[in-house]
Image (cartoon, rainbow, N blue to C red):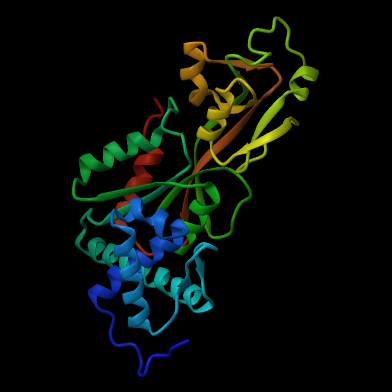
Length: 299
């Protein structure tokens, strides 16, 4: 492993751009996945990474048939880069606060498929923020809850919308709404046209289990899906049963492509909250968004 001949010079704008590429590649898990996020080619990403490694005098990652893997030096550089980028955003927020201006960025992490919620307070709050502060740049990332919480804690995200789970230290929570999920099957499934559906027939049917959560009802899970869209894909084959949020499944239910099974007993509710990091420096944009989120009507 090569070492720099002298201490790293002062950080320049070009270095910041390279570090943003680096942190995005790590967040996406590789060059290919980062192409869409960065909107540049894999060859350009590879060149940026090579430039950063030369600049730092470190080997940051290994890439090949085994996939993308950070080296130990890369892990340390990634953690330092996150602190630096979060510090830059914090500086900008504090300067804007000193001027009393609603400028800068608002980075939000949201769990997938919440846009169909009938009472989406996030949408109303964003509408209000756009009207009051048209210069604010809003960045939304659709990622799993655990990544959202990590992003808020390490400064990559200002706020996240996640289901209530264990209370992580360092996070403030604002309750938003409750989501109901029911058990469904798709057209063509043996239970779809069944006159009588029993607990026994449900428990014997092939089911799809979400990998991000564990429904409170025991099913015969023979397939898994990382998100709700994956669950819906499998239900629409007519081969599986599984849980979906009522608001998300409503489209297919109305079209006659899905049916709720044992809705009186096989359902559960999850509370969703907005999470922010405790003790962050003043940020007028985040404060105004959270105020709008708390005050906005649910309708």
